[in-house]
Image (cartoon, rainbow, N blue to C red):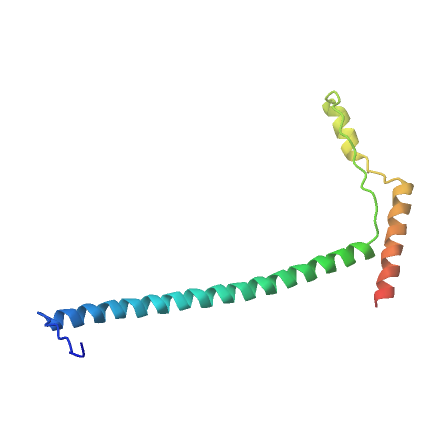
Length: 122
């Protein structure tokens, strides 16, 4: 059984061409696969950087929210009223709007708090 076996190939050029073309397509697919893997790893790195940046932004916003003064917003409900006559609209548009002194005092105190915090930060 130490005999060498020889198999005669009818068209060796065709077989060699077939093997080379399969090898070529395998190598091309391997290159594409490697590019995809590289893109996945780059994407993972960028997502990690994005996550850290978003976490940092979130913490900075929470710190900013802590330092800003908190005031409740006054919401006025608009009640439907009967339409006013044209004459009364003209009179009301000519009279200047007067802001109540309580609102001015609240705004002034808020402004003073903001200026105080700005000085502390400087």
